[in-house]
Amino acid sequence: MFSGIVEEAAPVVDLKKEGGNLHITMECSFANELKIDQSISHNGVCLTVVKTTGKTYTVTAIKETLEKSNLGLLKTGDKVNLERSLRIDSLLDGHLVQGHVDQTATCTDVREADGSWYFSFEYEPSSDEFITVEKGSISINGISMTVVNSKEGSFEVAVIPFTYEVTNFHQIKPGTVVNLEFDVIGKYIAKIVKQQLGKE
Image 1 (cartoon, one colour):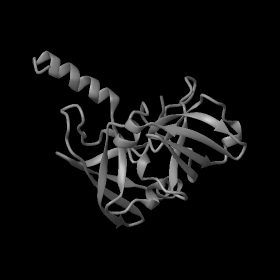
Image 2 (cartoon, one colour):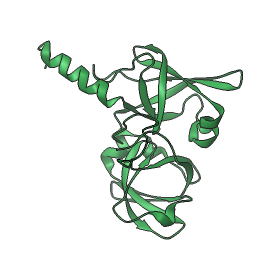
Image 3 (tube, one colour):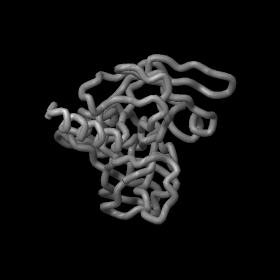
Image 4 (cartoon, helix red, strand yellow):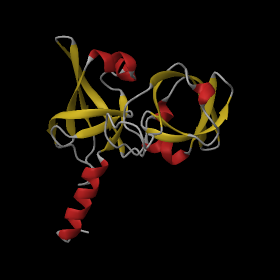
């Protein structure tokens, strides 16, 4: 479980394909603190540490993960949003994020607004459970964000300078594919309502 508060946007230093899997090696400031089997969020995808070298660590993404997320599009040098697992005794500054990407979205517009930025995204509404709610929470590349201008299949988020610089939002431009995880509480509510209405 994560909070959507990114610790660091770190560079990919190596990518190795092995069958349908992709081994991703990252270089980050807390690599020497990591242990084998530890869970780390990578652009919102929960992956397990399989190797550490002090300055770097490696995780493995399987075929299904690569197909459902943007990790298969990574190139050496790309910045990836990283977050270690949420501690039970930690303050929850973002929202509950599982690290299970629901689907991807594509950036359609980026515009400046007096020191901040508005990013617009479009996605394929594949389920009644995967919807955005005005002023609700959503995880974009593992970042806890608040939805504005929500419509069917599209939404916007407002990004402050700190978030723009500290996360990989500064790499996102029209055409960029991002990972989405819809609010888990909203998904459960939608599922319960569908069951009550006899739609499942």
